[in-house]
Length: 327
Image (cartoon, helix red, strand yellow):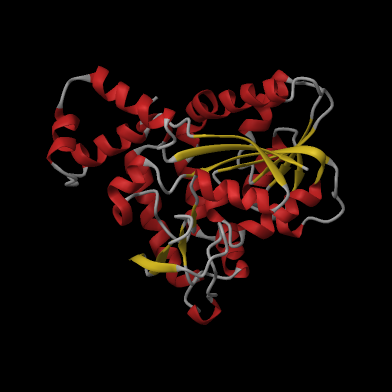
């Protein structure tokens, strides 16, 4: 898999430009921003690292989490995700050309993974938080037709798309859901954790909705990942107000355990770290050191594959996957 398979460079750059235009519309009231402790370990020992799009990122001295501080309030973020031009651009322009590639390369393997993990249980109630186009639930239902798939999606447009596919929809942000306590066997949250105003409160709500012994399966960005560490504030993965939290394997485990989850597995199965770095060097002329310039221009594909395998194996990929179980 290549980066261009799942995100077209020009469309992605246009998406980032649209986000910048949304910022003064949805986040002009800086008085509503709130100072926070580290979302991973709750430490107040952190320092400002850099500013991007007028948002300040801090680095926790204790657990290494990178996070926006101060950050927009929940109400500002909710309005941005539900109504903004960049959200519409994502839904209408960016995602459709790569939807089937993402289904094949991303959501189908996730469904296969979960199908094995929960193979002993048949009639699961499965909720996908921020389900988008519902691709994961579609793929899981193909493997396990007896499940009850439930979309949890606050975007009106994407909720309507999921309904058109025959999926059951809760058209709300997770934090606003009522009447579903202890009704889910599995909740998933893909590329969502980095967007949350308060990840701890999010996990508390997940815990309310899960039955005892239920599972949470999430993917998020690893702040200690190769391409993020390589480019830091120049990384395209860092584009506030979207990505507020960059956990790492240690800090996400700490947060889950503090919220009464048993961590079953944390891995970094990413395949794109080197491809992203190579693309930034060759296509965008980013300077990151003589060796990396040399490798990017090299025709030695075997060496590049070996590097990506090493990155993935030793938890240095920027794509992190977590399976946890409610106590």
